[in-house]
Length: 114
Length: 113
Image 1 (cartoon, rainbow over the protein chains, first blue to last red):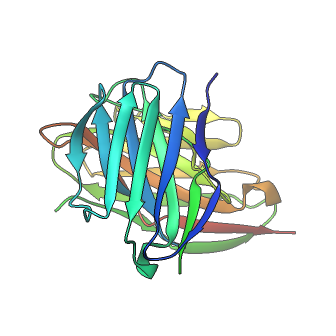
Image 2: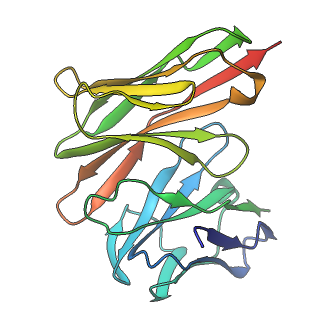
Image 3: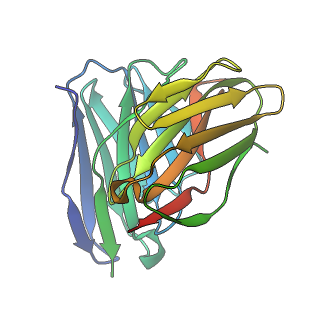
């Protein structure tokens, strides 16, 4: 299984809602990532988890809250988002966080904030 | 500040043409440079380059890295309409606490009949 699975594929939420994005991989990778991609822009790193511990937070607003319950799962909890947070949220994994090499990406969750 | 710059930003070619995409970078603690192809959703991996001057090839695609001049090129020969996509260059570097991947702005390639 060489897949990174993200759910939901599409999400529409209001600014007062609380929702979560989920990401799962069964490749035994120990590093997992959240990227945000706006239209016609490259992916921007948000968070890096290594061995289920947060190792990088790229100064992401607290309305985004990551969680790594185990080595296969990565969540992104969303609360009180703004319309400008609408984007494609990509999850990725790699075997290790040191000398990561190739990242394996999921197909993304397209988020619309009304 | 670490940065990755790609050129051109967009390109329109005819099927059968050869194209060269450029990526230059300025990062500290460089580890590798990667090329990805992104169509509608997730980026898909093409190449990882760590050593200067060693060409990597996969079918009609090839890539090479110059660590002295801090750039890489991606060549596509005999282009096909299926090559139409955004090509992303990404540089991996050590931040002090973890390895990070920073993407360039991408080159949007359109191949026409």
